[in-house]
Each structure stands twice: as C-alpha cells, then as structure tokens.
Image (tube, rainbow, N blue to C red; front, side, top):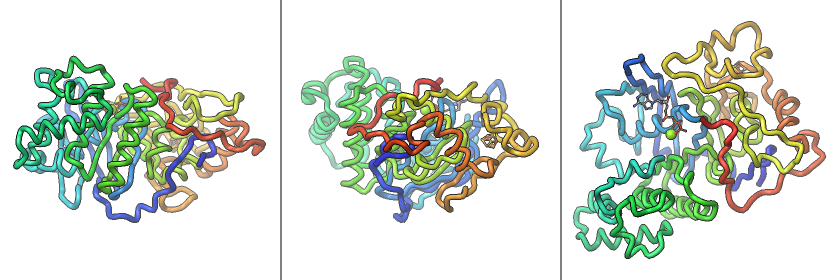
Length: 386
Ligand SMILES: Nc1ncnc2c1ncn2[C@@H]1O[C@H](COP(=O)(O)OP(=O)(O)OP(=O)(O)O)[C@@H](O)[C@H]1O
Ligand code: SF4
Ligand SMILES: [Mg+2]
C-alpha cells in the first residue's frame, strides 16, 4: 500500500477499537533549570491499544523521549514537574513510588533506549545484565535459567555466537550489537507495553528489518502495545497503526497512519514529508528542508509554536498564528484525525501547493504512486534533523 507521497504503508488505518493499554492525558513535563523552566512536553494526550503500534515522530528536541520516559516514571521527581495522567492497564503511573514503578518497568512495560551505550552498565557482562533483568521479574528463576534466557534473547536479536558473547562486557560489543542487546533487554520479560526509542538507528538495513520484524512478532504473540519513536517516516509507514507528530513538546497532528500520511493537514507534517529523501520515485520531486530551527523550550514562541518557520502563516487572517495557540481538533476528514493549525482548508493547500512540489507525478495524477519497498526506509530525513 502506498500513500500519496510514496511512503509505503503495510498496516491499515487503526480502528483503535481495542482496549487501550496506555492512556496519556494532558501530560505536561517541565524541567526547572538554572536558565529557567524548560517546557519539554505540554498538554499531550494519546493512547495505545493492545496489539496496536503508535509511531511518534518529530524533529530533535520535540519531546518524544521526555514524554515516553514519563510513561515509565523515569524522571527524577526532584528535578521534574509532571502533571496530567498516565495510566498503564488502568494503573495511574504519576505519583507512584519507585518500588511500584520498578514492578511495572520491565514487567508490564519496558523501554528500549535511544542511547544503548549509556543504558548498559559498563562494568557488568551483557549476559549478567540480561539475566538480572529476567530474574527481577521471575524470582523463582535460577542463575542458570537467567543465563539460558539471556543466550536465547541474544540469539533472537541476531547476536552471533550468543553462548560465547553472553560473557562479553558492553565495550566488547559493536554499536549495533549493543543496540540489539538493549532490544533483548526490553523484550526479555515479554512486556505488554514496549516503547522503542529510535531502536534501529545504528543498525544496517538488514538488521533493522530483522528488528522491526521481531517487534512485530512480539506484538502478534503477546498482543503487546508498541510505541515506536523514530525520525524515519518509512518505519512509521511500515510499523505504525497510528501516528503522533510532535513539535516543540506538543502533539500537532494525530491520526491513523494511512490517513495522516495521505492527507496531512498540518504544515509541520508537510515539512517532515517534504524532507524525506525517498518520498517519491519522481525524479522531479524536490527535497525541501523546513526553514529555521526548532524553538527553545525555555521560551517557546507565542501562538502556534511553529509560526516562525511556517510558510503558510499569510493564509491565516490577521496575526492569529503568532498570538493564539491552535487547539488540537478534528480537521475536515473526521473525528479520528486531529491537527493543531488555524488553516481553514489544509487539504486544498496540500493538494495544490505542497504535493506538486514534493511529488509532482502524484499531484497531476499522471503517474501511479511510487512503488513500495519490501523493507522500511532506513535513511533518516537528514535534511532537517538537528
Ligand atoms: N533533564 C532535562 N533537563 C532539562 N531539559 C531537558 C532534560 N531532558 C530533556 N530536556 C529538554 O527537553 C526537550 C525535549 O527533549 P527530548 O529528549 O524529549 O527530545 P526528542 O524529541 O527525544 O529529541 P531527539 O530526536 O533528539 O531524541 C529538549 O529541549 C531537551 O533539551
Ligand atoms: S497555525 Fe499558522 S503558523 Fe501554525 S502551522 Fe498553521 S498556518 Fe502555520
Ligand atoms: Mg529522543
């Protein structure tokens, strides 16, 4: 299945009919710092049902990791101000004690971290760290069971000679192997909610496809809910049932993957699509980086936080874009597709102005959509990432 912009989607639009394992409501995360208050996440709401995958996408610093870490209660409460509600399987996470959080972490919910080196303890052998993660939630398991499980998991994520490498220290692993070890750690207790923060960035195409397949297998086997954070819209198209686009700590567009990628309604999402290198097979298609840089979250812009970079401001009457923050509301395409933008007719602007620039063949209807690729794109939208 291919979107109007040539990004291939393997999943149909989510009905989101399943029970929501994770419910995030009005999440706000602020960090008091010497320079002032960092508004890392503002009024963020989303949910993920069992068996569903939510993709979170946005430029560097948009709050993807901070919001996800809040879900697992990973922020230091002394240095973080968190408001809102986060419920995993009905259990409120905000305000839970560290011991209760530890029970949730790894067991019902786990995170594969962006920085594998920082996440593995340098002084402990990889296998020991894996077997401890297993033992923490399987108190009856012996050391031998833990080691066996560690080897099984290393094998599962494609570490060669896992029975030997299980005794290596993290520094003896390559970057890609460390990332795979982190993935093994995340999967070892079959979590019902898995948050994968850029899980495949350091991996080559083949291994990336294997890891994404692995996540898909986990989901089918355990009916897990998965959040995949990525810069790669190809991964989103391949993996996600729903997409949440974040900008400057807020959700700016949210909807079923195919719907959102075929009819994006927010200029920031248009910018993300415009800067995907393989967005169209059309040789006339142009890569259009979003002008400017993401704003400082110490002092975010007034109104729509994207307004200093948005090329469509003049289509909105008066100074609304710079003075009034748009609500996240349904656009013209139904209640399941939310966008945060004052534009009155985004569909028309996308079809007549944006699409002709990034995929002229699709815009004039003279060509069929770009062919799909068997594996997701592995090239991050390098034109924009900080
Ligand atoms: N502990 C902290 N103290 C102060 N500011 C922080 C802290 N952690 C994160 N931030 C800030 O919060 C914002 C959101 O960061 P976050 O790590 O969520 O971005 P991201 O979307 O995951 O980006 P990337 O794609 O680079 O991983 C950034 O401006 C970051 O500098
Ligand atoms: S609200 Fe205004 S500045 Fe923000 S994305 Fe829409 S048109 Fe652009
Ligand atoms: Mg991050």
